[in-house]
Image 1 (cartoon, one colour):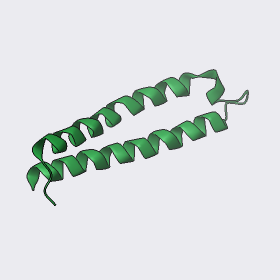
Image 2: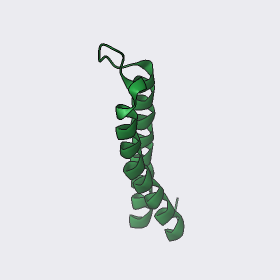
Image 3: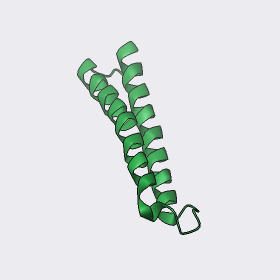
Image 4: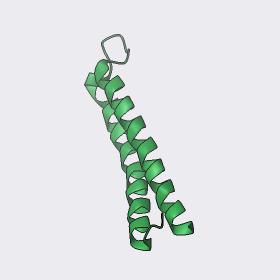
Length: 73
């Protein structure tokens, strides 16, 4: 399948956006008082957000990789 250059660029930009934005979000979540309980252990709030960020970054990397592959094809 051939991917038009414009669509490949959109995929690359979307992937880079995800890789740039989600780590910043996680830093804010980790500073949130709901992230840790009184004993300093991670709460469900933090765990859910770590999973969300991890999945989003994997999808962002895959999106960028597909865009790059489309440009190189």
